[in-house]
Length: 368
Image (tube, rainbow, N blue to C red):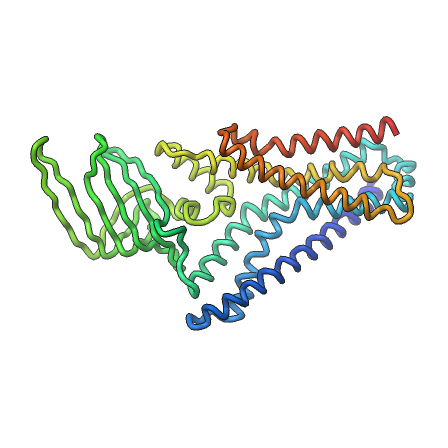
């Protein structure tokens, strides 16, 4: 069995690596062509071809994370179908590779792909994507969303704060910061405007060029307004840099721990976290789709191929894999609109395709 496993693992890993390299080369080419246009637009700010190459290279881990399951599917289908067409799989079966042992063998290999996908998506991809965005922002402008920026909420003992961040600068600092303070009665207590802010390590922001307006209410019939101007002001809070990135950048680019902490922050401040909960569970279940892919590919080893018919089956398997990812995205949108349970929304496509794959595998083995 060691020899059989070594043969199958070597063939599948080589095929998956070849498919992944082909897809990454294609995405790299398309991204580079698009960035060449950015070089022309931002040449005056110093954005050169080497910066464009660096930006495109930093986007490779994100593409690798997105492509891993489909690459695993295509590579495994190709290997299983080729072994079946050349009758090599028949020889493996007569050598002791029964169907359930073959399933266990591929599941162990699939677990390796699951771990690789998790490491890429939770560590390499968020770090590389954030570095790429900051690199490009250094020459092409600042990171922002729309004209209003990002809105966050912070609840503290003596009131609630609504925070607006206009832009995220290339050095990680915040620009165009506005802080609205509400007391426990829901009345506006103060409004603070700052040109920039730096997030410190001791749960505080250092605001620069501050203009603060305080609304002081002495009784129900009289009130006064006080205005304060200061070069710097320290504002204690628990809004981290990762939370700012989640509000300004795509939540799927965050790692699992940061996304979970941001969800807890939203829930503690009575804000809707449905979208981010779905993304969190998709981050949890997405690496497991590699297991779904290898299970989906195994029935191809038990098909009988005519001469030249392997291409049709491989193409059909690729379409099945693409339909899985389309269904995964559709369920994400539907679950967000219909307020489905986030974990069920993320897990249901994988459960459906796993059931279909195991059904096809059982029928081919037991009935044919």
